[in-house]
Image (cartoon, rainbow, N blue to C red; front, top):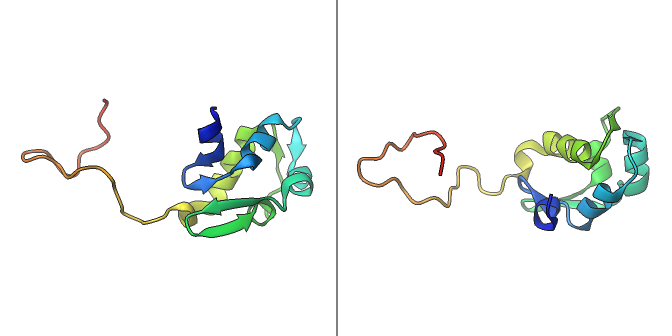
Length: 105
């Protein structure tokens, strides 16, 4: 994972925490992650929360930073989405179906 994608993923800004999680020695329990990084802030949309606030309800052992990221992304849900329903895609051209699924590029 490159530095940009480690810093921000699916509406969650991990910042330097992403690098720290990537270089941690795993496996780590949820309590260990919270003890080490729980006061670190993550940003989602217009809200800032600590990693500890997000991971608090888990009883989990993480095998790598991907597991921690997945837990965070599963817990934040819609709060990480900025403007719901927003798309920066251009409107469909005449004759194109507006409800089309993802197309391969």
